[in-house]
Length: 466
Image (cartoon, rainbow, N blue to C red; front, side, top):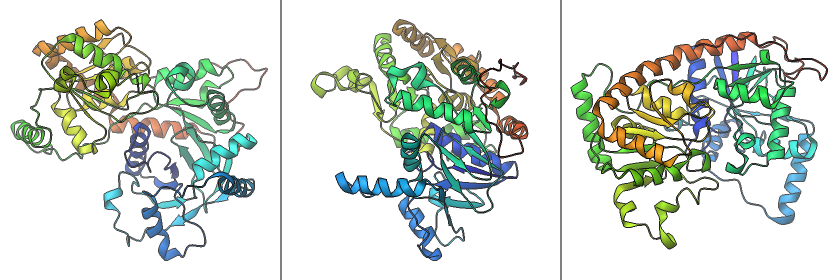
């Protein structure tokens, strides 16, 4: 079977949680024996000679579209909007190996076919706002299934369209994000109305969807959870003994970060209100531990309050903070995983997560975790993490002190984390994907996932794993 995936988040140079999801999905489908088609929004037109399309595609991944202002921008949007009323035909990018693209595999995973349509994701959002309809995309010999990794106002003709809805943060915690909430609600409802199936990544997100949209057919929503791809982060392989792995890790930490194994706490993820970094920093300072805190994450929307303690008065960093807290905007994945492996513990007291991938990534390499008892995080962490109330600074501080001083607790959590992570092993994730695809109606013209207005909620026929 051939399955399509969008490159909406994959194309981002510094990645995102959804980019990791898409990359893992593409890898998993390849392992399962499916052919994968990828669709991007890089501006390469049909008039470009075939021998130049791959060159311009990979060149365009890192190029911002030319900025237009005023009348020029309105004219361009109008022209594109008129053309988009009839749908779009994507351009195929040849994969003959002429462009040496191995260094971009994290942004363009291995695939059978590669397509692009100029700025298609921005155009689709504009089209939906203006007309209330999804932008239709055409590919030659379309894949059996188009698995959109994000709720996007796009529909691939001739395919069964599945939309992944990771969470309902803009609707459950509207004060933590900048999305237009009316637009977001309309978009989600349109995905449910026009999609053939909906994929979620936790029981919590699935329950949120069913509660927020009472007419949503439970049989049309599948939770697949997520998985972590096998390590490729430059550490010693499985054939190396534990002493050799520990020695390599120690050398990497010392040379790259001037840190020692088990010598720091770590937070990694975006810096935005729902991640609760402000309370984490406050709790860390209140805990008065000597072990430093390393924060890896770029500032996102509404992050000013989250970094106030890191900046200090009038932008001058407080001396105590500068000596105890170190922050990086972004690190390549292999560098980040080196920090994850070597941390005394990962602290991730988020207010709300659709899944909480950092928790699973830490547990999968045997690093103890402190996280919150909110949304999906308890189902991901199980009994293998120290759970805290994310709104209680004193409780987070107490958890940090316990992890700092209790060697036995850290050892127990590390062992339990490895066991818990096996519940999300790649082969189990692939089985869940296979089962979901088998449930999607064979016809690409299904009636959608919303029940008629006069129909009652059907019983949930999908057994959930313990």
